[in-house]
Image: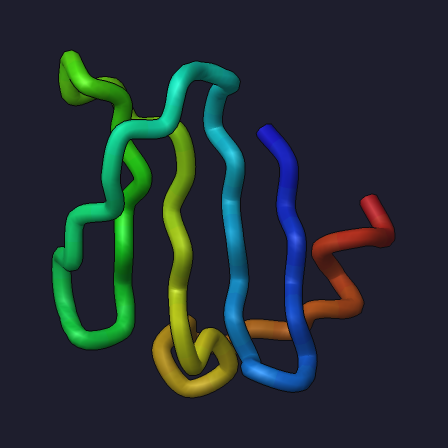
Length: 64
């Protein structure tokens, strides 16, 4: 699992696995899921992460 945070857009991208991307599914206004043709989840993108994730601190993602 890999994390990438874009401070300019306040977006958190979580890669769960590698695979052939087919499309993004909009789960909510602030969450998208990237999937393969057979429906396997590749990644999750959370928009406005600091607002949508309780106690979110991007500095803690990279200091484990």
